[in-house]
Length: 225
Image (cartoon, rainbow, N blue to C red; front, side, top):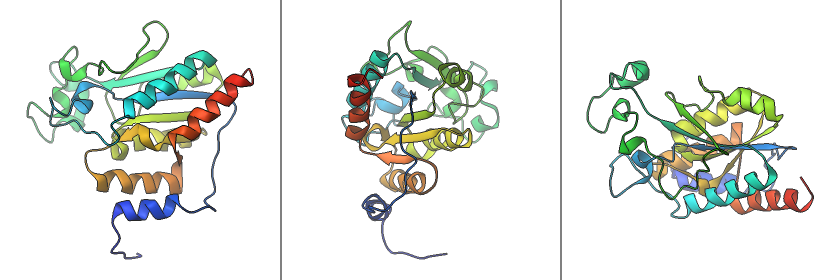
């Protein structure tokens, strides 16, 4: 194993700055998967489970979503929420049992609600309640992607080290080009965040500046898709 005194942030900066880094690239048609933009994870003044990395994260995600809708490409929002008994959390909900524990994000609770800053379009966007880290696990996401014949999955949300990573690994495993706009993902601690951005870039996804993704979408709009 290679040893290093560098921080996760420094290692990420080195990887990102490599001009020869091979990429998967964008395909022909994409889905936008916005993972867990719910109050439990976005309201830092309200819940200690929440986190913020880029203050403009939700603004950027809304900008992506508006362009997807213009293209008539699918926009998906996921959130986690559990039954009163928490039995649907399975073993994932057994390590702790405090008001802040995962399995105590109950259906219909404030913690389960989407952050009101998110422009979730009822009747147009797809909303999936997931119980496990990956947005693909036991949700209709795979079927949606087949129906829309997409070849590219653009992932936003949190946490970078948890559900975003799980979604990216599952996306690549299913044969999709996977894109993670850096400013659109967040985590509780910079070490987890930057270490996982590095790992995602090296193995599973293209981690890009959000402005690159916006420009790609604008190009598709200008070119009539």
